[in-house]
Image (tube, rainbow, N blue to C red; front, side):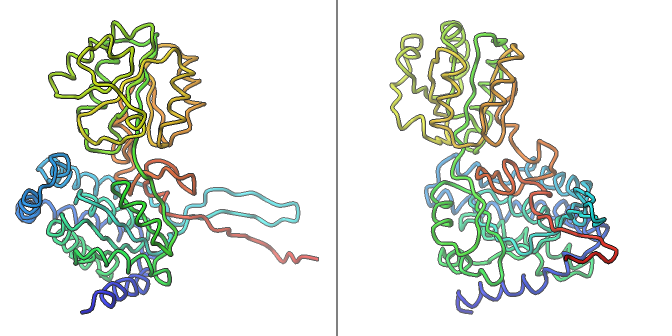
Length: 418
């Protein structure tokens, strides 16, 4: 079938079946999620076989180690997908929820009720676990979904899409509620982005290049975040042992993801003590430091930081470090160079913690915790559809509620407007 015809037909079918999932009972939706969890567990070896095909192809194409890491489906990541499906099933169904009610002087009772968005298109790179995360959340929130993963994960995405459809079929619902675009041609994305007649929202997940491409070519509204330039600020009233632990985790635990720290800000009063403490661990982990002038005096191995480094999402074991005079300079740095993703302050001072929380307007702000916690699964959303850094109807990690909108439901007893 011609590419344009194939993608258009997928979109048309999604629109056709979307009312059936929008009206589905909670129990049926939960049963499907448990069915899919069982199918993934039963087919774990088959999933890994398909994933190995992608990994081999990726190595042959010369993908970097961080990208191969994002691509790999380990036993732990498969177990996390299964657990995520069960968590989403256990969460309250947002569809039909009355979020607010008030009475007007004329007796009208005004309510706001959550309803599904409709058909959601999700375009993503590398991480095939997104296929299950995205499908589970869109399904539970009553939406049909079209999934277009990266060409490097085509085999992994296909098998997981097939397993999800099998889980849906057991319930009697149409399997086309969840569809994976089965081709690697990048032109498929362009065609998908023109289907405004059938698709209600596009959510891209991936690098800045992909997100800008989607935004520039879409006729459909886009929820996006361009990159994750995340900061940790170590205050002069921080517990330094805690700060070392957090700063190490935020950079090293998984550097190739958007909630990894990219810039470390350190108060001048504790820099001479703290920086050698953390750098001892960073050296063992192979972290390259790009530091300001003060940082380089304390850590002679550090390379000179340049302006572009403060804007950079390295997605690798590279870290920009800046010594600041106080919390105000730290906040100003975040405002200038940050990407509205995730920032953390390490301090024992309650007033400074409150100031940081109030004045830093990124989508997730933490006190005495790693930036790596900015994740829907870890925050109890079951899984996340993405992290939105544009201040639209949802901001930050997006779970079930973020995949609904509210309509007005008004109850009267004969009121007319004069």
